Amino acid sequence: MSRLHIAIYAIAASVAVGCTNYGGNYFPDDKPSGGGQQSDDLAIINYIDQRLEEEYYWLDEVKEKSATFNRRLPWEEYLKASLSKLTTNSDDGYYNHNGQRYYYSFIREDVSTRAQTSGYGISLHYTLLALDQTRLGIAVEWVYEGTPAAESGIRRGDIIVKYNNANITRDNYMTVFNAIQNGTGGTIHLMLQRQLTVEGEENSFNTQIDVATYAPSPVVFSSVNEEYGTKIGYLVYTSFDTEYDEELLSTLQGFQTEGIEALILDLRCNSGGNIISAIKLVSAILGTEYNERLLCEVRRNPLNSRAEASTEFLLEDVGVALNLREVTIICSENSASASEMVIEGLRGLDIPVKLVGNRTEGKNCGMDVSYRTINGTHLEYAPITFMCFNAKGFGDFGEGIEPDINISTENSLDLTDKNYPLPRCTWGGSGDAAYVAALAMTLNIDSTTTSQSNVPASLLTTLLATSEECRYDEVSLPRRFIGTRIIVEE
Image 1: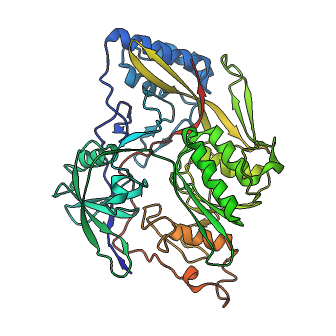
Image 2: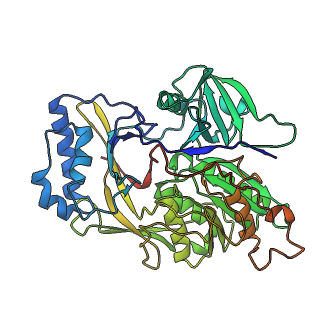
Image 3: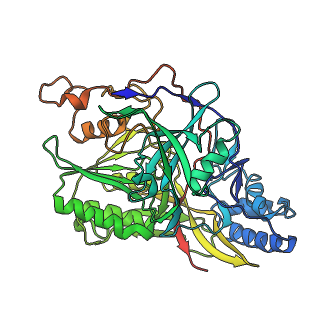
């Protein structure tokens, strides 16, 4: 097995696309907004103010300080500038390593999820890799099935090292990242290096891919592992997206037909989404015995004038019943909001959750999302309006949830990847420390049993010895959090 030796490159820079500016960094999948006339700005600012004063979770302070808000700003800048004047809203967002504040609340031109999209079918990891003093690489987070990227042989963990026959550098990485992620480059030529290869594979290869239309399903991978005497279902789920609930339930129905006895739910790339999808997922996992049980309660500010003070979300019959009574979940610093709610929601029902990865984001709040068109501008507006609590009334995970096995540090299974969650290999591959550790946890292997002769040797070997060259200083691109959402029709 060969490895590509890389160093994680720390760059404090902006990705120059997007309509919403968060602290000087742009989300790579947003589209430019183009501003607008002053009258348009004022109309949108009035809309922003209305919801902040009526629904924002910290609306008490908004009302106290609204007179200090700068309404002469363009609407794209107004929300962040106003929220930055508040002191009680610390749960709305997070600070990066430089002390720069990012807010979960947002308003932007409507880029809501659609069933079909156009592109190459590649989702990129947000970390840039220093291949040497001048060349950078971009890791492939995952590839959608049936897309040009998948058909060309690109897979998770591959490192893009050349774009259209040119090296990736400090000067062009923003352009390259966005062209690939957003499918705006037309026909492109890529050179890739594979971090972990099997016998007969080349370390690097070239490919050409074209833009195509595909469905960006959050159910990016599923399998059943029977190698160790137990049928273990493995589901990689990257967003709680109601447009793909049918596919989610179909995959879980396949697990039921296969008769799985355990489940590894991979949420390491899942930053949240719609609470309705979370209800369906957990309902299918636990089965009808848990119908009408509370998974989550969302609580709003008592002065909220547009919604009930609290809303309960109960489990339901979704036509799939795995009837599992424990779950192993893979998480990471990117697991947020609805992903964290699933973890704590299961625990609130006394369902044991074995957690593998590293500390989650810590987003225990969510948004009531509304859509409105103002003077021809189609807007999606999502201020933080509620906090989340499980059936036991617990919601204090604003600092993140610590896993049982932290892959980023030394642990009892001796499976460590200091650069986790940087993708290394295909989903469910033996070079994925988090997946291997999740298998061990699911099979109840721990530090007291690792020397037993009946334990599969392949499961206990440290497969990811981290190169001394590698260092994990910081991410170079901001993560985009969808958050726990409730859609409000206006």
